[in-house]
Length: 309
Length: 286
Image 1: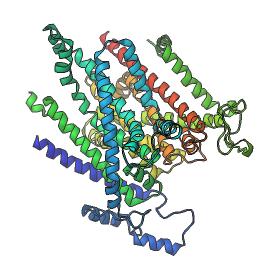
Image 2: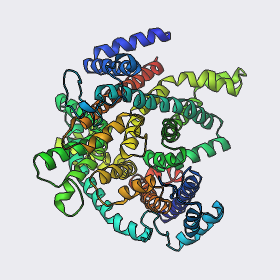
Image 3: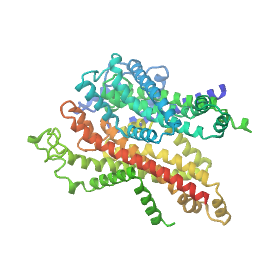
Image 4: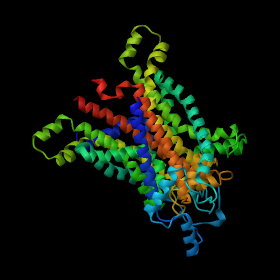
């Protein structure tokens, strides 16, 4: 177990380093720079600014500097907010994004898992058809339509909930619902399929043949195995929450990482793009490693091919 | 069975499912409307008529007008051309690049496989939208830049599928007998293995169309995709949110168009997947 974890850690660090290096060079070679505004700056002013941010050095030298600084935890100052260190922005934004993500994930689980189990176990064709249709629609619904309809209905028309910002529980509802939909659809679909599959297996038939009640078969025998494939959802769900946060935080004006990332990309704020990408990379690589470790823990067959033999 | 016969029998299968038929017709209709946009649309998409700004739906303007007095229905039709063609073009890009690399990796193994799978693994850790946004920094926000940004991320998933399929197919008896007959590797791969995999390849590529259309509209909506002189469904919806309070139709109609097309193509994609896996099972049982 420890060996697997250490190996995963090394792999994760490598992937992360690769990501950051690619992004570093990608943005340096991209056309346009952070200080190209509509109004052309005088050449010497621009030169001075670029010198201050070290943008006039060769790219490889810039890269070396960036690696040295960021290993020491210094990500420089943001280009659009000149007096704010990237680290300070990140540490202020991260809690907002994490709480938004946690709320959406929790809601998705609380709603998605029971519906998935029920529709996997029930033989009601009409219910199954309805669930499939709802799942399909929620995957096809553009997030901006959902968010806008919610704002229109609950903030503008009914005036029940605030349309923006992130100050308290009443601010959590609309962004949470918008962000929850896709993960919920994923969870429900997988749970439904998984329960269906497990219920057709031989050991379930044996359990039924022993005369166990439907309830015991489902809760004691089927679900114990049915949830294992759901571990594989960790990665995709994290990915959906992350990219969903770009849209949700921008629309609801939540000062989280997603919104900072979008505005940093729009304004070519290199240091902030690097900072936010690093945090996203850490989160994704973490979930990826966690998935693999959990899977090998839940299903011993995946641990090592030697033990199978 | 020859291929036209196959297509006909699939079509008759499709027509037996009423919901699928409706969606199929809707999808074909929106494709036709997109292609024929310059001829069927009642107005010019870019002509601004100041007197008719921000009108609601009416007999003259079926879906109303936008803040510059342009006819929304016309702009939606022209937007369909951009949104749908980016969806289809990126899927074709995947078809070519993904099939090629996936097939090479699965068939030749060794270092070819290691390089390509390394690439695939790296890409699949990160969400495609995040990568597409980062790539759009390099490629720019023009039509071609957005096409490249989405395409370069999307082909990886297809390559992974083709690799797995080829890896499996290479173990089949027909490949072994082809080898025994002295047929070259190249010929076995392109003439024997890949033609046998058309079903899964078709399913995987068609499944990319809705997600790529969604990706384009997502990027454009955030301002990270196509820019306003270009009207895609994403940019139209993005313009629509600005007048949400007073003129919700500007957001609702583009989003609904997007929703309908995504729903139809998702449903038909799933339908195709179920049929293909069923027919492949039937063939291997014969």
